[in-house]
Image (cartoon, rainbow, N blue to C red):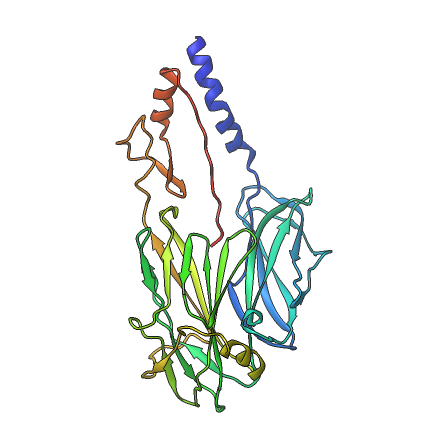
Length: 338
């Protein structure tokens, strides 16, 4: 009877959690957008309640930066109550300042949603790539790819000038989320990371002209742009990468030109079959982890990957450890935003 009572006590918290139906709130925003310096630009943020109960007193926030002044700032934009399974869209406006160097071409601001207590329930960054007025650049689409942990994938960049003006300076902005490591060891590329390391931004200023109707591509072998999957990346999972191409003014281009060393360059190419606009994105698929399987039941087929390369022991593994008198349960759940 004591044994049965202990087992009942072990199962009680899970049963209680299942009955509670806690709201699961996320905020969804584009990973990257482009904007002309000095002009008002908007981005759509979607607040979603994935839970089974309503959420109350939600507030949407968009953190200002030195280069971006956004709406929904310190006071926030009231979302109010949100029913289970419901979503609500909001438009956030911002006006980017002009870029004076490579480090100013891309800026990132965070969009978050808070609950009744004021605590942040979810957040997501938006990277803004500045472009010059009158440019009409477009990237070819990039297919999703499967990559093993610790391995690399090439980022096949092809850009076309679909406008009527010559573009004298280009910038390529690559954004990769957590567990992905962009590799671009070039003098004309700058790295930046969000405070929580959830996103890495690489900005490469390419001092090449691109005339109307012309196409340039990034060589895959001589000087490629790569993304590495971290050795401890969780799986199975999908990780997002986005690329933007923008026109750059003479001021920012002149600062970058003074940097010595090897440079990321483009070469003439045939026009692509599909164009995705000045921002394109793709996903890197990472397979299920094979490390860290529960020692109590290494052959079990119902182990669940929970992030990094850790795996959650199966219920039979828990029971075996309990009977042996060595129950040590540490569950670390990682929640990511797609």
